[in-house]
Image (tube, rainbow, N blue to C red; front, side, top):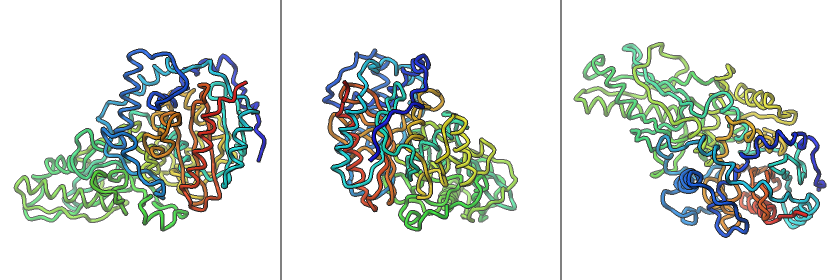
Length: 517
């Protein structure tokens, strides 16, 4: 076990620089109000802050799990081996996420005078906890306000990040796009080729109509109706029209060589095309949890069916038939289109559920915006270049995909915590705070640390693979100090429950330990 140590590099920030961004560090602890049974007290926020808390962090986050339900009513087995959590029922209605309002009120919710844990006392508490555990843990703890490392056991070591790699992809996506960016799915028609469904980067298409409240907002039925209205006078009665799916927006390979057959067949991911339904599921997740084996094939079949229904409803005897995917654009101008939810909203959905398919798509969209190749190499290189632009040391970072599914990717706990620091100091990245899971309430942490004082306090991104698992985020100590933490665990050999239990214990020790002088 390495001794806890302070990092001079982390303490490099001048006091004046720190004070500039101190107001933002509560972005990860707004969930405090739902924790219940707290032993520390903050000054009462004003009415606007209360509205932000209730609308954006409590009611909204619970509704992402099951509308109107308490956390305890949505639990699943801790033995569930899936890397992602079950898909929530729906995204919130459009325009309910006001990132600027959340950010503008954070300064009223933090106790900047709370005592900092003393590194020696914190090391005693965490070292004793690690000694009682059976797995291998690396852990880094950093004071959020000062950037001072308080505990470091392997923070610079290359580790398999699992799904915490999604944090890096999210930074890249917001760096090259905008939180309000939307993806457009369109359709074209040529009498000699038929209809072409053109993927534009939206992985949350509905296979039905869009109500503005369903996942992703863009519906293939809406697109089919608009397409039929545009072409109905050009299609002869009794015709059978081919429907091809243009996936040329992304480059091959669509499947990474390191992704095992088990990942592909168990629903964790499928070939990465520039369109998919329900985040990689075959239907509304209220009705099924079956994953899509081929997003292009499924979307094409659903679109063809909706086109046939639109023609029939209009009194035409016309059939549309799925003709498979193509890498050759039709050349015809689009006749109809639908637009997705914003990138910020899709990121929130994807991060809380750790949706692998969506993050692979986010990485490619960032690559396209950076004029790089929209494939595994181009997207991961774009992410690393982004990190370098932000001043992160990428010496030990090696990414081969955008989701963390590959066991061949490498990151460090230090780089992961630095991401959180940049999210505070760089305004474009602050929406990522809204995407983190809240212990005991939502996403991949909804069944973990469900009791006070941890529930609602620990906010993090999780990651699970057979060979390693991670958890990185923030907590608030018994003395009210906000801390970053990052944990990487090995030796579980696929025992996901054991790895999660031990990681949670370390986070609980960190939260319980004020450890100040």
